Length: 249
Length: 247
Image (cartoon, rainbow over all chains, first blue to last red; front, side, top):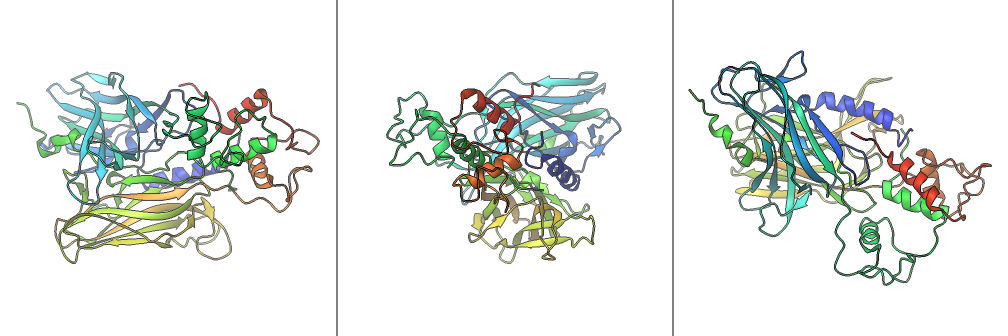
């Protein structure tokens, strides 16, 4: 199905990504589990730029350097997405101890004061003698652009990134990161927006989510008319507003 | 002998950074998308920056411009951009500009077009600070006439941050874009016989048709006043969202 000019949009996107390393958010819908794979090509260097070998993996160009190499990639997910697992794909054929650390972190953007940052999850595997996948235990981290990550109000704007640290030899490589996540419907407010959809109504959180997203303004007079039948015309308004349809390419 | 990963190992606790892509919340309300420092890449491969322990991007020695890709849903209206930075030296600046990059095709590329109003400069602040543009409106398209020659072209967008550092205290934390989705304007000629341009639902029904979500109810009509069954609702939703692919 052609949806919103996606095919050509993707071609443009690929061009843009060829110019700039970038982590794309997955774009499947619904509240079920889905996967976001952020490949090695999305990562760029903090202290030295990576090289990519014929296996598609990322390598440190100066593996004997005693200062480990640090690479990172931006991470974006829909507001409210819950990340439940992180897996790193690594190669390690070094005979001696070495370090590979793959993780996810958040930082507060601040207008004043000291910055606040927080590690969210990481895997730190030992020597594995080859290519291997390493995953965290399941966890639950809700992704928000506006979040109180240091449990010290108020809420601030937050950015997220994936982070890779490598140290130890020429056969330490990095293939990418795989995140498991799912969408959530936002928590409802304490006060009901519509008189006929009170807080104890069956559909309360869902109707409130639509109103907060400006997908509906109700049926007039402060009501939503939750039990009124829907016409195909009204359905078109709901869907088009919800998805911001449709711009020709 | 175990080697130390040094200050870089402070690591995971040290984070910072960022997004590149479009936020993917829905609806037509305002949303804020954060593009963090890690999304920015130097335009000069020999002068890339480094991320400090505060997660901010620093380049203390050279005039350097860093760019980050911006991808938003087609038709998204960008209304404000805020720059988060730190600056401890009077005279150091970061100039941030939203840019459209015309991609070559037929006709000569014009290169980079600065989006009017989508620019802000961070000056001396004696520390961490944020500064925002005045509200403006720029509609994001992958295909648009950005150079004013009356012909649409394929366009990539980016944020460019030009560092003018006088010392090492100049850093970029990230950028926050405020934007909202829009429904596309309807075509001149209606697609369905029973949904003329005067129909209050005209624009929305045309948007569904153009997106391939509906083909109408048959006979060149859409049946806008027919009630919807739960079964039809399932078709609309699964087509609209492209549901569901297992992994």
